[in-house]
Amino acid sequence: MARASVLRSYTRFLSVTFQVNLQAVIEYRLNFLLQVFGMILNNASFALFWAVLIQQTGGIGGYGFSDVMFLWALVSSSFGLAHVCFGNIRHLGAMVQKGEIDTYLLQPKDVFLNLLTSRTIVSGWGDLLYGFIVIALLPGLSLAQLGFFCVLTLTGGLIFAATFAAAESLAFFLGNASALSSAISEFLLSFSLYPETVFDQGMRWLFYSLIPSGFIAFIPLAAYKALDLKALPLLALMALVYGAGSYLLFNLGLRRYESGNRMGTRI
Image: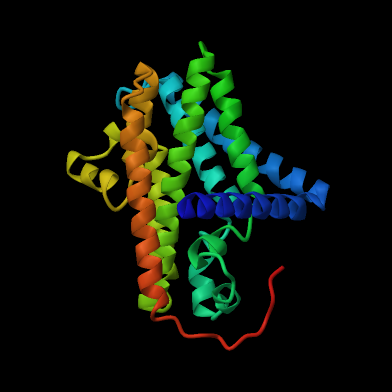
């Protein structure tokens, strides 16, 4: 009963936080729409690049145009979902350096979850929407495939958020870890957007460990093409593993945190 009560409490908390963040970003509707559609157009330019490239080459590493577009759709939606729901995943390190998490330490909710969900990134909505536009335009989309895509977006978004938050948490241990965390984040995003087969075999262990592109893009692509539901428990488990690892790293670092001696309130 106690666990169920805690779960309901956090569900309400996350729901209210999401609503507040959404209301904050759509208050300035024109700016919101410009950023969302600007991100969609930015992503669409890469789709045009891949269309021309594959038309000239006939395929990249055994991947056809639909395969590459699926990667872009899934990675874009997963990346966008992570930034819509956990907007501070790329700002955590800077907040630690500046001593700006004092206020969160005084809140009754879990510091890690409270901190990550206290912001939403407007451009993330563009990434999220773009992925669904692309998947809707791919030929032969069925309702089952769309539902499968939604689940894959959820697991991918959680792994993105966990990896980014873990990289940013290095600031607790290294001080200014912005260069390292940025490199990890960029590697994860970049590697996930290219066919796995273009990378050297000796590199691929990275995609299933430190830079989990395999669980965000490569395994989901194979599962989606075969509509293989057996892959979902593995992906859900890996989302849990990376999330737990990120949570543990953050809390270990929090023991080393030095207050910025700043007073403030959060409503």
